[in-house]
Structures are given as structure tokens and as C-alpha cells.
Length: 467
Ligand SMILES: *Cc1c(COP(=O)(O)O)cnc(C)c1O
Ligand code: SF4
Image (cartoon, rainbow, N blue to C red; front, top):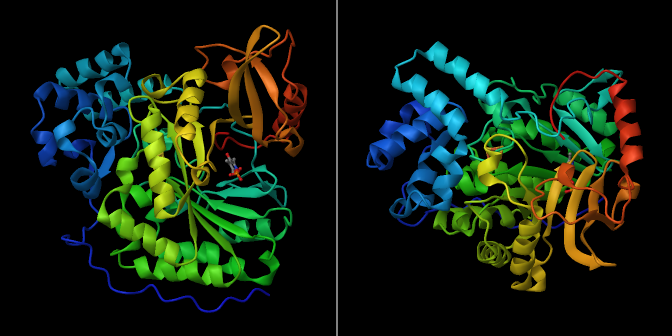
């Protein structure tokens, strides 16, 4: 049994410099005009935002508005683009279709119909593998869980299927606009625990959402705390994927159950678990406020670690200087850089997507500038059907220009870390655009992947979601 001396208590009182505690309050698309900073923007721009927000999800809280966005730099400010809809996020055709309805004063029902038409044209279910990776317990598929890679189970708690603010690039947008009623929602705590108890090769549980940190500590505790019991000895790591360390740092400071949450993390650490907060940061600007720095420090004080991950997105962070500064800031604050992702082909992807070649160049140029302690970050990586595939580089071999690729994670663990090659294509933005190099017909994993898919599809598991 692991024993650690009692860590110092972190339940001091916190005074965040010059700041009264904020209470969480959201603005949705209907409340645009109540945001004073928005009311000052030109009419055309406000109208365009209304149009886009009728199609794509929109929600923002006061902290993001007051502390993260630089309103003197709107519309170019990256956090503004990360959270507020922009005209170009819809194609001209989609934009005009919705704009015309709004101009002629269509009623809510008509608007909803048009919105749903447009949404269905935005590839709401990327990766098209809606029946794969679903764990089965007593012959029954488990909603709200995914078990794709041997070591790690993903869990989507029902109460965590929303976020403190929505990202404009979010690949889970379909569930926030309600066309995908809570596809992932898991209701049964006992299902999770029974599944984990029966799978001794699982070492990691990853709670994800939405954002599980919208949940009250009391609920999080019900899911997590039982894992301290002996039958879960094999679960060594508990990860929580969250954007709250950017969008709502008060979750760790002044929310009523903030201290209680930190106590929970401490008790897990004392009980011998590794606790990793998988923090979602897209830009160094999210880590500059005194409030967020205090929140980070409080989390680290519990003995948990924070690892960071982010997609690479055009118009927000497609610049090596931004990434280098972001990784340096993270190392300084005690956060371990972990993943750089390629954006998924869904929603407003035409606004955000970048060619793989450009992504690799940004990664390399940022990587070059940071010390070894920030070089823990892997990427650019595509979370695709067969696995997480990283672009390792661009090379010329026997006069053929190629992408050098590897699996970081594979549906079959045996695929991991074997270099393989695709023909260079300067425009390719995703795995499905790539063709094998050197005249080969298929990538080495394709037949086996096909077989895995057929086998799983054969079990007729109902539709539950992506990747
Ligand atoms: C990324 C991912 C994981 C975690 O993989 P790690 O390499 O352990 O970080 C687990 N499950 C799914 C479905 C994923 O996409
Ligand atoms: S925090 Fe994550 S799940 Fe929530 S909107 Fe942003 S990308 Fe989507």
C-alpha cells in the first residue's frame, strides 16, 4: 500500500488581486446585445454574429469577456475568435441562407428548420465510426464510455456535457446545439465501476465531456472516489479533460465547492493515484491573468499534475511564436505540454483547418525555440479511426517527397511507433487525403483496420458518436 505523508493543506483563503469573486453567468446567442462590449461593435458585425450563432453553438461567460478578450483588438483578438462567432465561419451560401431568413423576420420555428438544414451539411459526425469503441458489459453496450486504446477508458459523465464557454472550433458542437441529444451521456456510476473492475489491463480513466469541471464536486466525487478501493488498484491514473483552467479558473478559487474539489484531488494522490488535469489551452493569452495563475498553483499544490493539449487552428494559433510562448509559459507555471492536435473536419472547419505540411512546419519552428522541458509535446496529431497519427516530418527518399508518419496510439497497440510514409501533398489536411508513398496500394494497417471495423460493426451496437 502506498503511503505519503500528509501534504500541506491548501485551504487558505484566497484574495485574488483587485478582484471581487465573479459568479458564473452565461450569455447565449439571444443575449448578445446585453454584452456591453458587443453593443459597441458596428451593426453589420453584430448582425453577422447573430446569423452564425443561430447555426453554431454560442455561450460565453463574464470572465472570458472581461479578462481574456482584448476588446481594443476585436475582431482580430484570438480569444474573441475562439469564443464569438465570425461571419466567415459559415460559407457564403450558408450565411446568406440564414441571413435572409433573419432579415425577413422569420419565426423561431422556421429559423430552427433552416439552422438544422445547414447543420446537417456541416459534417456533424466526424470520423464516421459511430458504432466503434463502445464498451460492452453483460452483453449490453455502455452509453457514455469509449474504450479504444487498451490502457485508457474515456468516460463522459451525463452532468458534464456542457462547457463554461463554447469554443468556435469545437468538434463536439453537434451535441451543444441539440441535434445530437447527449450522445455520450453516461448515467450509471455503477456501470463505470463494474466495467473498470473487470478490465485489469486498463490503467487510465479519462473523464471528459463537454467539460466535466462544470459538475459539482459532490458528483465528481461519486464517480472518482470509489476508485481508491482495492479492486481498482490497477487504475493508476485519473485524468480530467477540462477547459476550466482557461474559461473559469474560479472553479478552483471561489466557487462554493472549490476547496472541496482540491481536497478530492489530494485524497486521490494520498491514496496512490496519479491525477492529471488535461488542460485545454489554445493560446498563451489564456494563462496570463492573476486568477488563472492562482488556480493553477492551487491545483498543483494538491499533488496533481497539469498537462496541456490544444488543436492547431487557423486564425487563432497558426503561428510558431504563439506555440513557443505558450509552451514556455506552461513550463514556467508547472504545466507539462502534451499534445498538439489537427482540427477535426466538422462544423466551421473550413475557417480553422490547416494543411498537414503547414502544421508540421509550425510545430517544428515552435519546438526549435524551446528547451527540452517543453519538448514533451507530441504532434501534429490526427485523432482518426485507426488511431492517433502524428506527422513526424517531411522527407525526400529516393527522389520522392513524403510525409513520415507514426501511430502515437493505435486500435491495435502493435501499430504504434512504426514509421510509415505517405506521398507528400501540400494541401492535405487529414488522413483521408493521404496516399501511401513508394507506389504501395495501402498503408500497412489498412487490412487489419478493416477487419476490426467489420467485426465490431457486426455486433450491431447503436449509434453513439465519434472516433
Ligand atoms: C487520445 C485518446 C486517449 C488517450 O490517449 P493517450 O495517448 O493515453 O493520451 C484515449 N482514448 C481515446 C479515444 C483518445 O482519442
Ligand atoms: S471546451 Fe472543449 S468541449 Fe467545450 S466547447 Fe471547447 S472544445 Fe468543445
